[in-house]
Image (cartoon, rainbow, N blue to C red):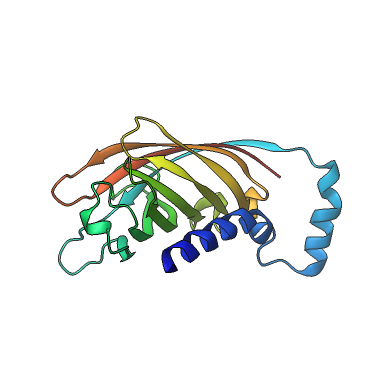
Length: 194
């Protein structure tokens, strides 16, 4: 019951994300001006390329960036880990190395949502903390088939520089350590925004 509520809550939250994130930290006057100009605005096209660092097992003295927080009673017996919920707070960098320039974080959840295949329901916010997009976000919600070569999922909204973003993100595993479960995921975003 709690798992069903969590999945429904996450789905509704991500559907509402474009509306909620559209106008962060603005005054009523700035928001009114933005909405007033929206019918005449032309969408802008944007491409972004960066790397996510999933750390399931961190070095001594550090914390992992992906943590299981709930699971169903049957999850331990499921070959797909059906029912497990992981909370994520991953580093986002410009290159694949952890010493690459940090551009932000990826925060959200991964839910193992299939009994037949290893696939995840992902609800993530890409939070940019550096450079010209500092303070902007992109929100995604979708399904990732864990063993697909190209994992595509929709961009449903954004804030800051990326207001009302809509588009696609394609993710590929750049490298993975089978002993720790740590991996680096390359992401390419293509989207329109206002």
